[in-house]
Length: 299
Image (cartoon, rainbow, N blue to C red):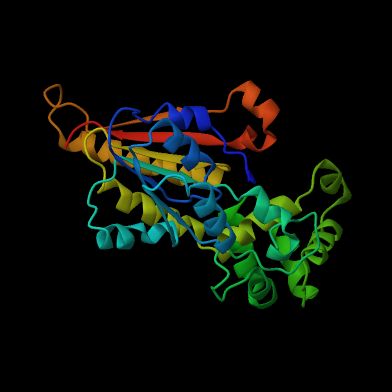
């Protein structure tokens, strides 16, 4: 059953060699949209997938059941190396991480990700962890809330929203928070768009420690790439894309600073892909997506 349409799929498939027996890690496998298409293109690939979400793991395993070379583990992608070590894998030809929240998670109101449906202030990717959006909203100081809104998303008037939250606690549901945000902001801003979107984004990132996890994943993944190996990351907003862009840029610049001019070739190259107009028309979710690919050229 297809729950979730993968974005930038053709651009990802173009990166995959269809002729060789290699190792592919889908670090955020979700509902296996990318993975199933990749295995359909190259059935020789050994695929290892990771996700924190129990429902996603269950459904990705069902979708990939016809591919005996596919294995799926419950894990935050920052810890992928622990599983690879247990499997005695020290090189990975392809990494893919799709950082977007799935439409399924948003559709289930009880997960707390949706600002259009009433549900608990949860927002946990891994429902076994203790920290929730509810605990942040109802326990963080005003300054801490401002920091979360400023660091994790482009929240308009973060001090105004943080002050309103502190003055109106306790808050228990998603729509209760949405209503508070709407009342706290000037009418002109409210008419422009639903500003709950960026507040929810900032809270979700904080609950799941997404930026630190991404940085840790990138740092570890580089060490697993062989010559010709590729690290592919799909991002959906500027804050997480900046982490990826800066990591790739710093890696290439650092390597450039240590090699002899003219004589030595570059060790890495990076390229960026955007969705086509056709994809945006057929899948609105892809509009803000960006694929960055880092390729290792030499040891």
